[in-house]
Image (cartoon, rainbow, N blue to C red; front, top):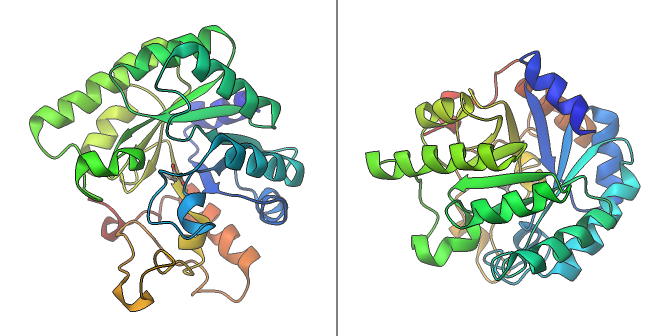
Length: 267
Ligand code: KIV
């Protein structure tokens, strides 16, 4: 599976990735040509109605990973490692990553650079493919003080570039970049293959949360829909068509022909 995606990167074809949490959508996405399915811990928000991803557990992640891999057996699946499952020690990180792989994931993703570089190296050396997640990392939302663009100052841009280099040297397959300036994402992409969300069109690929693509997410369960403001990087692909299948196909097409993300979806 990974080889197929690496071939796309080599021939400069953009990777189309979407979040997915169940077998029905997984099957639909596989048939629509989505390259990678991400079982994201965003399920805490879009499936469970929470305000953030902080209470997602390994049990939630393995349950949804099994469903997704059952629905799309021929598509590469990446599973998020939830908060608390990889930070304490590398052995525990390995055990949890192994659980996700045994649930059907082909790769795991976790957030952060710095100390997480050694975690990435530890997993890769033991045969577990890793995607690092840099820029805005939702599990640190309290530390960031909200959903804020990262890498705007020279210091934080350098930090992201250094983390990306260290992650590449540790053997990660991809770096997911969330909410950083497009120009910085372009520089990171020269170091290591990237998947962007709110990181501009020059990443090696793009990811969107399924509910954003369908335009159906309007905030956490405890908030009024009218108080919700969709992030700049979200695009409702269902608005332009009359079926979910076509919306997903149009997303794949738009990523491949580089019409998504447009400047209005980037920082
Ligand atoms: O959990 C998630 O959905 C993510 C996004 C950045 C796509 O990690």
